[in-house]
Amino acid sequence: MIKNLKLKIKNSQPAFDFYRLGNGVRVVLVPMNGVKSVAVGVYVGTGSRYEEAKNNGISHFLEHMVFKGTKKFPTPKDTSYLEGLGAIQNAWTDVDATAYWCKLPSDKWKEGLEMVKELALCPTIPVRDLEIERGVILEEIQRRNDRPDELVAEALQELMFSGSTLGWPILGRPEIIKSLSRAAFLQYHQSQYKSANIVVAAAGNITQRTALSAQIKNWFGGLPEGQAQGFEKVESKKGPRMKIDNKKLANQAHLEVGLPGVSVADPRRFALTLLTSYLGQGLSSRLFMELREKRGLCYAVQASESRWRDTGGWDVYAGVNIDKLEGALEGILGELKRTKEMKLTKDELAQTKEKVRGPIIYSMENPVRQMEWYAKQALDRPEEMMDYDMMISRLMKVTAEEIQAVARDLFKTEKLNLAVVGPISPSRKDKLLGILKV
Image (spheres, rainbow, N blue to C red):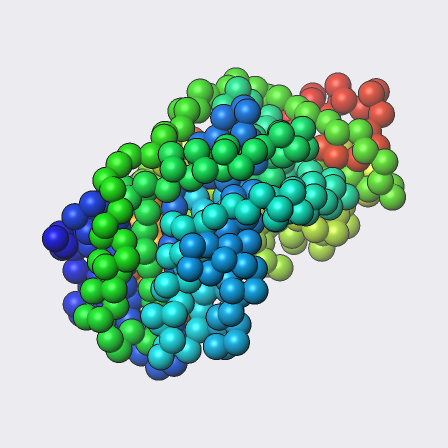
C-alpha cells in the first residue's frame, strides 16, 4: 500500500512528488525538463552521531564496505559496472546521514536504482575485503591529519559539542577502526538501515514515473517496519572556550571561531542564511573584504553553517600567518559585533539576497543537486518540504531587522568557541582567550 502524503508543487517548475510506502520508506521524485539524465539515490538517516564509543567511525567505514560486494553484485568489479553504462557513482557519510547515489542516462534508471538499492540494503561485508579496506580507512585518517584546515574543523566540532556524539569524528579513531569486526558491521546495518529511516530519491528526466514508482515499491516496500536507534540530544555549553592543537606548520595557523547555530526547522534559518553569506561567503563578503583585501591578515576566510534536527553550528574559518593570528581573530570578532550593532543597508540586503538566490537557481539545473535538496528535506523535515521557488520567496522576504536579530541571538560571548591548529606558544593562549568576546 502506498500512502500519498503530499504532491508539490503543481504550478511551479520543477514539481516534486513526496510520499511514504506502507512500511515508512519515504520517496521523493523530481521530474526536470530539458535534461537527459537522472540521479537516483538511497539516503539513510544515520551517521557518526548515531554511533557508540565502541564503534565510532563505523558509519563511514560501512559506506566504503558496501562497494566490496552485495548479494546480487558480489565483487567490487560488479558494484562498479554502472560506469560502463555512462554512470557517475558515489557515496558519502555525514554526522547524521549516509547516501548512495548515481547519475546516469535516463534510459538506464532501473539499473541505477537497483544498484543503490543493493548497496544500501544488501552488503555482504566480505572478510578479506574488510581487512583491506581497514588499511584504506586508516590511511584516510592519516591524510586528514596532514590537512590542518580539516583538523581545525574537527577540533571545533569536538569543542562545541563535547560530551555528545555530535562532537565525534566521522572517520573515527584509529584504535576503534582497528577493532571493528564483521559482526559489528552487520549489527550496525541491521540497527540503522530500517524502513522508517530510509529515503529513496530520483531527479531528472523521469519519463516513466509510474514504472519508477512501481519498482521502488517492489524493491523497498517489503522491508520490515522498524525504527532506527536515535541520538543523544546536545546540551548547551557556556563559554568562551578554546582548544589549541600545537602542530608544526610552515609559519601558519588555522583558526575557526564557532558557536551554536539553528536547527533544520528553526524559523530563523532564512535570516541566518543571508547573514552567513553577507559575512563570509564570496569575494564581496565583509570578512573577505576587511581581513584580506583591506588589512592583509589572511589568505582564506569564510563563514559556514550546519543544521541538524535538534541544533546547528555556525563558524568562521581563516588560515593566517602565525604572527597575525591575534589580529585576524580580532577582525573576525569585530565583524560579528558589527552585525549586532548595525543593520544591513538597503543595498547590502538586496545584494546579499541576489548572492544567495543565484546558487539556488544554479542547483536547479543539476539532477544530483535537486535529488539531494529534496532527499535531505525528506530525511530531516518531511513535514515542511519546500521547493526552490518557496525557498527563494521566503529568503526574499527576510528583513534587515530579522538579520540583525539573529546576529544578536547567536553572537554572544558566552557562546563562543575557538579552535586553533598551528605552532602556538603557551604564552599566547591567555591573550587569545582574552580577545574572545563579542
